Structure formats: C-alpha cells, structure tokens
Amino acid sequence: MPHSLNVDATRYPVRMRWFLGVAWVVILAKCALVWWAMNHWQVPINPAWIIGPTLMLAVIATALWVAPHAD
Image (cartoon, rainbow, N blue to C red; front, side, top):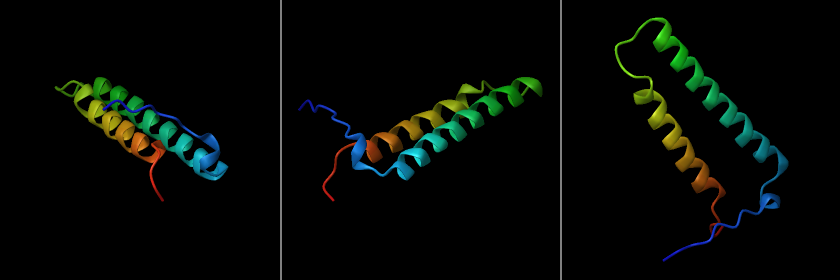
C-alpha cells in the first residue's frame, strides 16, 4: 500500500526542529571524523562499514520521528 509522506513543519516546536538539525550535524561530523581517522591511521577496513550503519539508523530514526503518527 503506497503512502504519501506529508511533513508538517509546524507540528513540532522550533526547539525540536533545532535539536534534529543539531543531531544531524553531530552525526555527519562523527562520520567525517571516522573516515579521516581510519584513513589517517590506516585501519585495515573500509570506513563505510562504520559510517553506513550509522547513517542508515539515523535515517530510520529521523523517518520514524517525522512520519505522521497518532498521539
């Protein structure tokens, strides 16, 4: 069953939207730092093994938070 995603920006207070924005900045900064550190110290695995799941879970958490739900 296809669902359309209608995001109502006014549904959440400005504080909550700022929190989500800051959380994403922290997540992206962590990913950049992990990528740099693993290349700098030549860790023998691809940084995508750490960054991929981090971003995937962040997207899922954001989608669940933004998606309409009954209160």
